[in-house]
Length: 475
Ligand code: ADP
Ligand code: MG
Image (cartoon, rainbow, N blue to C red; front, side, top):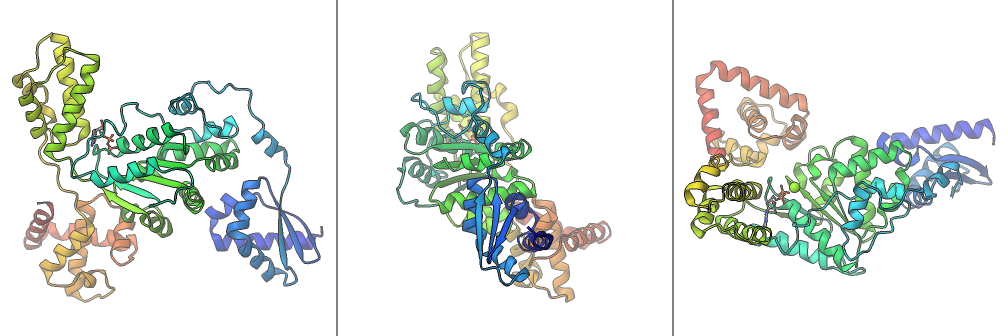
């Protein structure tokens, strides 16, 4: 191969990088080499079959176009898998037994019925490492009530689907506040899906996904990781809001697209709707929103009571003398309103107390034991749309004025107030707020926040206006 060819190749790579961006480039093209150019055909090599098929199906035309701008005579790209040392190192099974400690093992065990997953080599398997499952979090123990009927039904549907069935909603995206049953439902899908043996279900926390991927990258088995992911029928990702880091997100995006396009089911839980996952880019967000998005609301009192009852029944399995009289259950259901975790905490205390002292559970004891779990109502989750609506109404402008680029004083001030409220009443970041205010830069938001902060110190009328707005939003 001539030096000119190599130079041309460098320029093509530069073009490619500029077109697809650094993240995508380093995920997919960094290890692509030029092998030869012959009679209008460029032969490029990549280290694995997976990479080859991925590039072929997603980027073939791009790569060709980049070549053609460099050398018009190029008519065809041929991708080959090079048999590098690296590759055999990835594929060769390690001597390590399958039953070694670690999450991979737990994942195997979690399948019940003695079955194990064949996810290719153990290195990749470890990298995939399903997160540990809690045996109690099944559909049987999940209590259905008004706030979670739809989510539960959708989750059941997903768990019961057979290989080859048409995928009804993909991804299934469930969002809810803390302790409202997301993890419970996702693990139920995993248990029940794996029990039928129809499709392999892999449950990963977003952290595991990141850790798996990042460590896979470090140990050079990222491709094995991807390959192994392909053996998964249903990918379940919990707490997606914790997914961080540009390259992880690019990877998540590729994985999501690859799985969905291949007709595999993806199930996701997060504490916020897709539109609020500020660090993900628009395409991922819209892909996430493109399936079924279900919100689970707060647990109502009835549901809390049912959950408590089912918990007591379960606890009596191990502690037959444990009993919680109906009035005590009613009291806890009424007062411990926060979330499912606190309900569990309340019962655990009663159980511990009655075990340790040998006393029966009474209302008086319950009042004492759970006192600190009775919290004042959580402040309502305030939405940016609500802020915009309420502020617009207050200042007699339209919401679209607030989002517009108009700079007249009667719009600028309300807009700043709304941005300020968005920063103080929600957990959204400055860039996210900017995005939600007609695609403004985060520095504009910062400016607005500082401006209003400065003003409320001196301007009593404004301070009061803002107090009123806050109260309206939080009631
Ligand atoms: P999240 O993941 O949404 O923060 P979890 O799924 O961890 O919440 O739920 C917190 C606790 O509340 C768990 O012990 C869970 O079993 C219980 N819980 C929540 N919702 C339900 C429900 N509908 N039925 C039974 N238990 C529930
Ligand atoms: Mg959870």
